[in-house]
Image 1: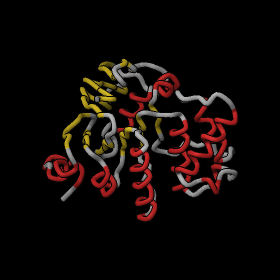
Image 2: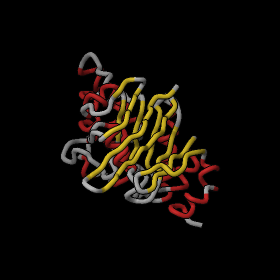
Image 3: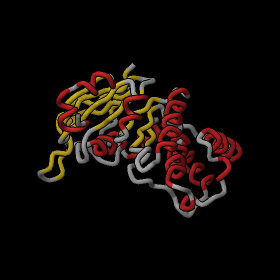
Length: 239
């Protein structure tokens, strides 16, 4: 089943075409990678899907419903969660409080405070941050801040999770741990669309990859297909 469908999506910023007639879809249960050079339009796509921006034209359908132009909180409550390229945590709040906030904006609200706290504890255990529940978010190392942001997104109860460079700035050990976390999220029945520059991760865990360049889709296929695509090699991957 097509969980997310994007058709002829366009977004301009003045004379700059950030997104031009982009078409793609994400099947339920997939991990799909979105790659391309800096400025290719990847985060713009995320901002359009999540409601941070409205498209100039084109269609965005989630579970068959048109979501183009809806507000971010409306889209979140429909079942789309996201992280950000630059970590956006509530730095002075505790790890626990950051995740608990996710429940207030998600589609699956527990019936009482006790239920919310129990769900928050479960998510922190899932992302392996239980031992830091009372720490201020600003005191965490980068890898754990990224895990915290993922945890907060999971707390909203998403069917589709948009991950924007969750492995950027991490060392090889942290990248491997992040890859395992992404796989475990999929095992929970959550579909994933991820932007990433760490090619080892993209090629290892994605079912399909979509490649953008100058706001246009230039290729789509399996990791094997993409690694052999001459255009993608020339504009992004290199020899």
